[in-house]
Length: 359
Image (cartoon, rainbow, N blue to C red):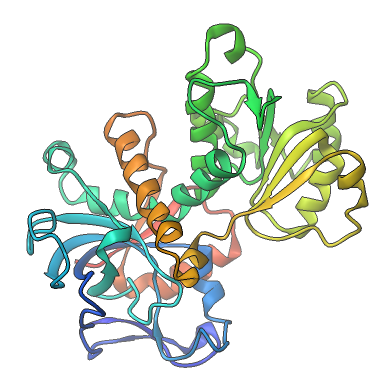
């Protein structure tokens, strides 16, 4: 089997090998997937620098993908997962030594999502696999930020944990997670009645060249982080009160900005880092910081928490099929280009996603 294997700490040790062993099923609930396409995510290059008791080398990298069921375990429903036919897409475990940057991948059948045949029949040929592989990590993380942490409910609002909420900001709106956050906020906003809908402001940070793009995803007020003071601009757009919710996809320094620019009782959802300074201000202003770390769900060994990843995948697939959300712009590369593409991803400023076609 061909795949990208890393033998020790450092992305320079990530090598494309031709003779890797095809992974076997882990237990009765496992399925083996013949990978058609795999999505590249920031966590992939970050994993090249990890080493701990739960993360040891060698590893085949890659956590997102789309492919065809190749083999199923004894406990898997054979009417639901048909070998050689059923197409699935998935977000995998960070602790699985069998990654998606390879021709075959093993996953627990209970925590992935089936792509409906009716959708495949209407899709754009082989392109559909790359499109679907671009979704899981970015969209599932965005789902947790918008719907799980902020508890927004379609058709209900404008409220945030039963508090009136009309203003939101997503930092890094042109990226993968940011693009889906904007779409989910738009989906929620559009589910409201006209009077409530008109109150909602969706701010985002990006470079000026991406203004039209983020507006197409749902942003109402893009902010150029290169030329504008983000905190000052947020306060200007919210009459000095600050936003009700700040979804941060940039890092600890940006979370520190968030604490200066959220309203009384406001909320911060941090996907990348935590605030590094005194949090007393949060206490006196009744503010809350949430964290999202999607991949560590598998390390909990808790079935219900792990199954939630599959539930999110099913809901996102439903919205894709219904045309309520769209795929982000995707740069498709070959399997042999994964390492160079990870380095590009590490530099940032990628619009949408990078996906590698495997088969």
